[in-house]
Amino acid sequence: MDRLPFIDEHARALRVDVQAAFDAVHAVARSLAERPLPRLFVRLWAARPPTGFEAVEVVPSERVVLRGAHRFSTYELAFVVEPTPQGAVVRARTSAVFPRLRGTLYRGLVFGSGGHVIAVRSMLRRIAHSAEA
Image (cartoon, rainbow, N blue to C red; front, side):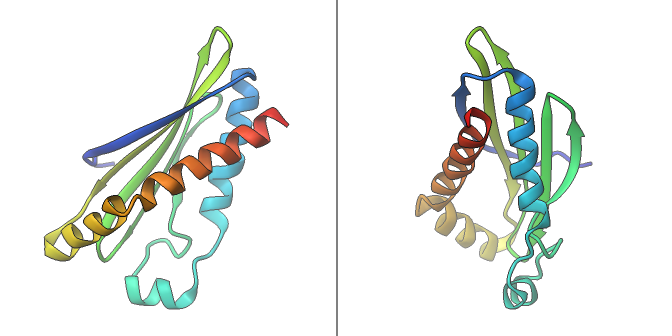
């Protein structure tokens, strides 16, 4: 698997053990990899896979790596779970490549608008809520 350039990382501390944190990460990752995107989006953007993400690596109690691609980007979202004295921390690491001018414009739109940060922080909130419930 080719390495993609690092884009950013967001983290959330949880007051649960590593296994509970990983179970929540795995559930959110599974939902991302199983939820189909609208057909029109898949067709126009040439999304691969049609869900937007597929799990390419799962290491129990440690990490889940999702990957996907479309006309403007090839991207990876890695959720990493690490133990802390208070419980666990979940890190969401984004890596991606944005080829050609269209990719550069797309990157500016997604990251410049703050949409990426909002989406990743929302995923981390879902993970925290699920793990700590």
